[in-house]
Amino acid sequence: MTRYGPMFGPDITFLGVPACDLAALPEADIVIVGAPFDGGTSHRPGTRFGPQAIRQACYLPQDGSRPSLALGVDALRDLRVFDAGDVEMYAGDAAAAIRRLEDAVFAVADSGAIPIVLGGDHTIAWPDATGVARKLGYGRVSMVHFDAHADTGDVEFGSLIGHGQPMRRLIESGALRGDRFLQIGLRGYWPGPETLDWMAAQGMRSYEMTEIVARGLDECLTEAFATATDECEGVFLSVDVDVVDPGMAPGTGTPEPGGLTARQLLDAVRRCCYELPIVGVDVVEVSPPYDHAEITAYLANRVVLEALSAIARRRRGDPWDPRRPLLQGR
Ligand SMILES: [Mn+2]
Image 1 (cartoon, rainbow, N blue to C red):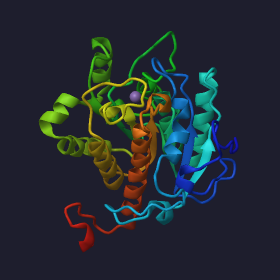
Image 2: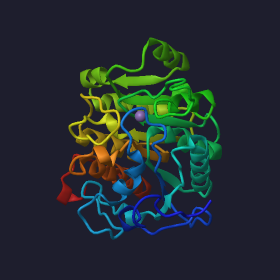
Image 3: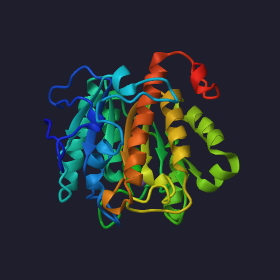
């Protein structure tokens, strides 16, 4: 296992943070890992180009500094953030690809850093959360999962590996507990009753958009956070960009109308990373070939930055009140 650089495109890092080698990890708070894999995609492909798009989608210099207006931290400087490049993930050999990714994520977690994985289709959540659970203990990590889809399919296209199935594999293997699994933003027409019955039997809690609209996202998050922190060492945050309405995130493989706004997702990710003991993050399903004006890549870049900034603010330790004005010491 070593630094490959990006699997596709020029050798850049996330917004210019220093590069690192997975085989010789530095003392780090955060290690970004690219997972350029779309071999588990059921419909529109292209997420193999997601990591590079997310790394560079920004109008500011690629200088390794991003002072957050909202949080008053510069996460890329306040935290030791490195980019390990892409794990080699050949779409034609899904089993080998996810094995390699799980080892990479485990190496980061084992070093004491938080892995932030740039997808890639959602298949990667299986090796991502498993890699973290290998370090912290099976059943000791909870999941907060933003998605239009439950991703709890059993066998699809004759395979156990696919972007509609990672959450089932994580629970079946014992890596994560079904009753510490919080899903936010589900909607549409999949899965069917058999899969919903299986999810209920695992004790999963899935907040469908109808409930989120009726109760408000903040109230749902507060409730979910109480479950996520009960009897668990840490929380894995998995963000499928298709949780956002396709009008604000068109560049994705399985768009489902009627989702969260970009603003709601950024605020929710901020709350997760400020209020919860986050031990791993992935941001998945950005498909640049289906994007328009880089809308989706820009959003995913900001999701990563929001997570980093909130982790930095949480570590700083002083209270943060979102209602205080910007120029009066928020
Ligand atoms: Mn998904």
